[in-house]
Amino acid sequence: MDVRIALGADHRGFALKEELKAWLAARGHEVIDCGTDSAERVDYPDHAFKVAGAVQARKAERGILICSTGIGMSIAANRFPKVRAALCSSALLARLSREHNDANVLCLGADFVSGAEARRIVGAWLKAGFAGGRHAQRIRKLGLVGRV
Image (cartoon, rainbow, N blue to C red):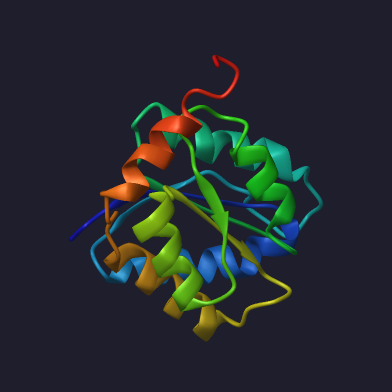
């Protein structure tokens, strides 16, 4: 399944972003590079907002964000309605984030996963689908925040 993926990172995630960009493209995925374009210091929210905005507007089916820990990126991305960003440090967590939470943005911590592990995590995340069922009701409730 070829997927259009918005990919973004701050300066700490730049090298891993570039590695994943090539890896994803080689597997037939369309990659929308939302920056950064170097290892020069930048503010992570700027790139998180670009990726989350692309997913929210359906310009991309999924997004991947990378910073040193992945925490800031996940906080920033989850500010967008209809974005469910999950910070994952293993292939199992990535699979479960899709199956149970229908995560459409994957966040990675470049200081905590190797390139090889990041590829395993992304691969598991892309292969997994939303399980629906009891999880669908929970996802619907996420859209009600502030309205109940």
